[in-house]
Image (cartoon, rainbow, N blue to C red):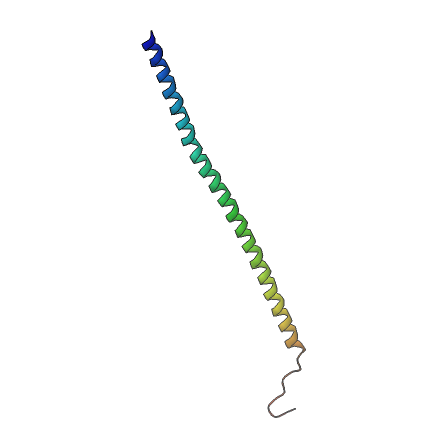
Length: 84
């Protein structure tokens, strides 16, 4: 009887240990998945920010081009070599 009881107790302790090990093994991939999700969110945010900066830079260049074009339109026409 004591042998059977001790075998059951040993089996219970082994199953408890294995259960804890399995829970730990399951947690690791879940943590890695959360880390990857967070990294992807940060990457997407960085890409949006980069696109916004690029849009602002293009707008700034376009405005400079408009300004330079307007300045050239306002210049007097060039004189001929022999004068008019």
